[in-house]
Length: 239
Image (cartoon, rainbow, N blue to C red):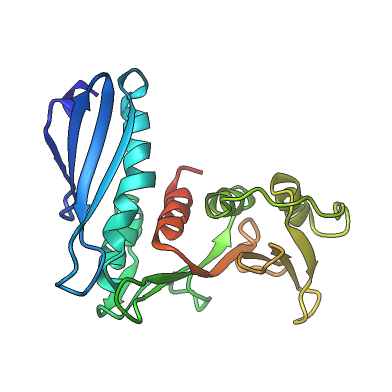
């Protein structure tokens, strides 16, 4: 932590610059971020603070990840790609990336004929707008719960009990994430769909999964760069 605070400027290898300063026992982290493809628009100042007594290395890193770095992915789909590739790159996950300023994609296939295990699509249809869709497949129960928690910012209302009606993995997810509900897929009894009330997030259980110990898949069709970054960080966290 002393080394972190002794540096006036943090520079990430991808070019993200954050300044650190201390005023009146308060640690301040600030950055100037380009958030629009319109060159006439001014850069945006991002500033977050925390008491110095709380500013250990882990707390500062989490504040950077949660409150500063996501802003660097808001300019266009390429900027979102640079940011969202970070957790995968740091975990040495060999995903493939491609695209343009209006649409980029990250994908990982395992070469066994199955669906991609990671698909992230970033679109920027116009200035000041970046949308992200994620599909994460072959998730263990713990990983699916961890990724879903990262995406669910608001407390969900508790729905009626469903335990015992589904496979044990489904019951475990429902117990861990109150407010989600489960039902059999219209595609047949092989699949069970766990969902939020607004269908913004779905977790699919496959009774005949290629990887029986990882039978879950997470789908978030439309979310923000910040939420997608949090989910991918959760995905790459140690099992």
